[in-house]
Image 1: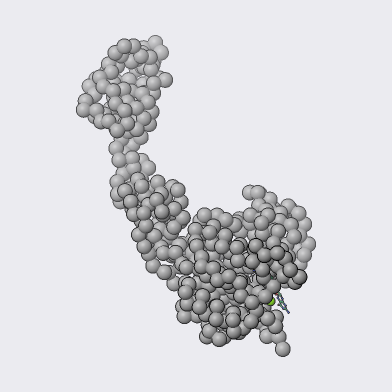
Image 2: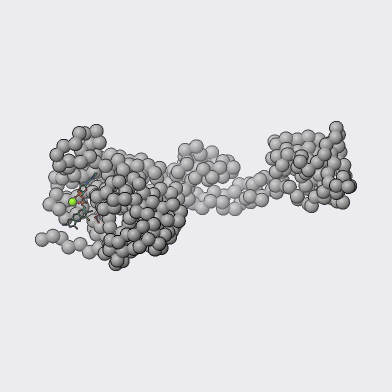
Length: 414
Ligand SMILES: Nc1nc2c(c(=O)[nH]1)N[C@H]1C(S)=C(S)[C@@H](COP(=O)(O)OP(=O)(O)OC[C@H]3O[C@@H](n4cnc5c(N)ncnc54)[C@H](O)[C@@H]3O)O[C@H]1N2
Ligand code: MOO
Ligand SMILES: [Mg+2]
């Protein structure tokens, strides 16, 4: 008798996984090594940015009051009393009708409250003249106009992007507190699997899921521990899974989760005493995706079918790993798009179609069965067609989840 499994709606399955995840702690890393990590402390501005009033142009610092009444017919002259570049501070204080030649980034001299660009002046040996009045603070980059001391600039749990690095540097963080990264194990199960370098043999295929997951992890900045390929034999697979589960924070297996005679993951979970969160999700591909917990560690039993495996990782494993790192944005960003071609297949389960999204239109990325490899490579998004729908036609508005973004969304939006 085939075991009867009760499918769980995708949103519930995602929630069930995420709820179980505990964070794995923090560590200090050098700023240069922090790109792509998750910030474990808020960035607080330790100074105003900019820290002083400064010139945004190459030109002349003046007192705006002296420019009153200037026009083409009434050019006003200023005596140039000093010359400063960025990094230099003038010791002089402007008096009436005096100017200081100042370069972009240099601190505004005392009493100056406007900057005249070179292009707005006529220069003689010692003087400049201008032909328009300036208002107070015209052409000034004000202290604190970007950020003010004490303000929380980036929240803890954010992805450290190049801009975050710039901020950390701005505020003198030579080391940054980030979340530790989980050790993720990958085991590909299947007697039919050959290593990448092997020649094809009758009935066999090369293991593509293993390398694909390595890359999915790499896209998140994570490394993994490889447990290779295990053949479909219960005791052998059990030993590898047991060892791998002990050595990692999270173990991803592929294949062997369905109801076949050689699908041993369900028996392995039982033998491990693992708590199975679900073993059937109302989605396609990936309906057999199974998630279990053994000794507080998450075991992702992804389907062997490549498209199902890929989708299972993006929908369940990725948010869980992000949550382990206390990230706040766990989910793929969601958008709406116009369907670029008919998709007539009915969807008893929610269908995640590997698709190409161009910012407006979304089109299935070719052959789209669960066993497809090609459409994974060709797609940059998952088009989501809800369960119970009868098929879609060109021009329909559909849901899209974006793949491969640095930082996603803080809510599951489907
Ligand atoms: N009677 C039923 N049969 C199946 C059901 C079902 O509900 N009742 N579900 C089907 C669905 S849906 C899927 S998806 C697959 C899932 O199978 P498993 O997760 O158990 O995976 P395997 O049986 O081990 O392999 C499936 C397929 O994928 C290929 N594969 C496996 N590993 C890899 C790999 N590392 N790289 C590339 N390709 C891989 C494998 O050769 C098979 O072709 O079950 C259906 N059956
Ligand atoms: O788990 Mo399967 O991928 O639904 O076709
Ligand atoms: Mg199977």
